[in-house]
Image (tube, rainbow, N blue to C red):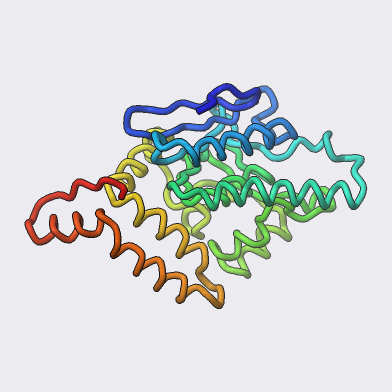
Length: 259
């Protein structure tokens, strides 16, 4: 896997956990064109790499996860350019959400605007005690453009999503956890707690985890129940199902092969 990028750092440990760090600390890890290009390539590489079992996305330094988009890059854009910018963000962040491996955002500081939207595209979110999240786009005369208007209501409900987007206010870590914006607030080191959660997930059957991601992604759609039934049925043809049920009956821990 290519681990050399202009704006990212990638590290993979022996457990197959890949830590992807947005590495622009002097710009509070703001999203710019190069970050999107690097993210696009990195996520494709991670998807194809069998050695990678799960992904953690975080930001460099202790101030910011991602403090937003690089506004200078698009301040002079016209409608067509802006629409394409939003569509590119949708495509890259959807690629993260569609990854068939668990993805956790380790939110280590400010996650604002596009940074909050990046966290929303991850499957789970763990915040540091100092994390601050928000979508302040209305203060620029805009709305979120990288998927937050679609993902946020599924997490916090439509009324709370409207409140956060229309006021543009920030939510500290405790409130973010209370309203469901993040799964938990780390008691100590957010990266280590993210790794601990990911390790607990990786103990389970890999194909089942992938199918759970696919099924839950369809929640609320007209085909959601049909998708669940098909993915549930598919798992009965896997070696992991046979191993899991045999281990249960034999009262031992399963040894999943991912097949």
